[in-house]
Structures are given as C-alpha cells and as structure tokens.
Image 1: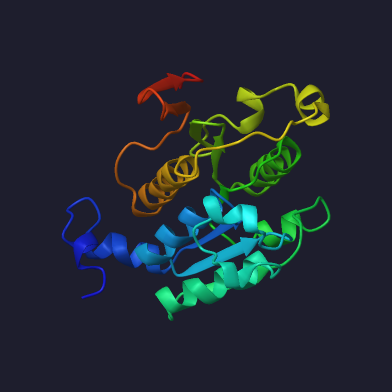
Image 2: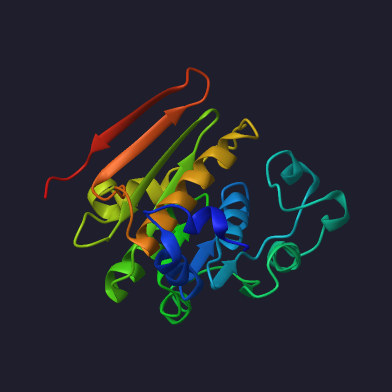
Length: 232
C-alpha cells in the first residue's frame, strides 16, 4: 500500500490519510522553500496542490531548488515542478499558476484551497497572503530563511495570531531594501520540510501545531528555539 507508513501511525491512520487525499494546499513560490514543501506534500498524498510562481529556472537556483535540473533552465518553474510532481504521484491534481500572486487575483486563487503555505521571499507577498487568508478564514503556514537560519509559524489557525501580530510594521518592512544574500543549500530543505509537517499535522489533526508560536533554527550551531508569540 502506497501510504502504509502513514496509516501505521496511530496519530494518522486510515482516517487521517483519507483527510490528506481529500485536502487541497496552495504553495506560493516554488523556489528553495517551495520545492521541498511540494515534494513532501505530494508524497504524503495531499489530493490537490496549487503552485504559483511567475519565475523561470536559472542556473543559480540548482544549488538549493531540488525539483529542477540543468535541462529546466529558462523554463517556467511551475510547469517544470508540475511535471516532476506528476511523475511522483499521477493521481494528485497539480494546478500550475505561472503568474505572480497579486491583490487582484489572491482572493480568487486562495479561496480554492484549504491551507496556504509560504514559499516566497518578500514581505509584500507575505502581507498579501496573510490578509487574504484572514478574510477567507484560511490557515497560513509561514516560513523564512537567512544564510544559515530559518523560522516557521502557523498563522490564522483556530483563532490564533496572524502575520501582522508578529510583524506589525508593514510600511518599514515592505520599503526596506532587501540585499541579496547567500544561503546554505540545505537550509530551505530543512525549513520547507518543517512547513510541510505543519500542513500534514493540521490536515490530519495530529500533534501540536505551531499556532501562536515561532520556531527558529540555526544550522551553523544546531541551536533551535520555540517562542510563544501570543497567549490564548
């Protein structure tokens, strides 16, 4: 059985696996974070996955964006990702949106999915995701990375905090010049995998979700921390 290792877990079981198969997830950005998120959610059996990204594959992506190969350079990320993911699971519905998430299309697209997962790399898109999820009552799984570090949280889940609670100063953050920086290739793999785990936990109703909490990790020191960002 394809999902035997899931169904053997008492926290997931047959019922939880059926919930995954009948669920839908939108991944915003199919880069360093989005690639492992998409791979693990497809492998886990999520029935419908949306991928939204207007970018094309470049040579410098290959150090960390594990869905792509040299043959994909200059091609649409979402189309390349869709082909790879369909080879992994032919019965999973993969929706490819070769465009940018904007104020004009966000509500229409996000409304189609149960959960939205952050694979993007800028503050403006994160505020847009958050505000649309709040308006539609959708959970938002947040992830961000630095050179050797990453952080994950779950916003707007069961009445929990949203992104603006943790980052209230939209004007400063969205107008701040973001300097290009390096990143160790495995960092988005670790952080994206944690984001995927949060999605699976929410959909199967198992474990402790990072609601009102911020998880951080530094892969140089292997130090991690869990911060409470809002009391119930």
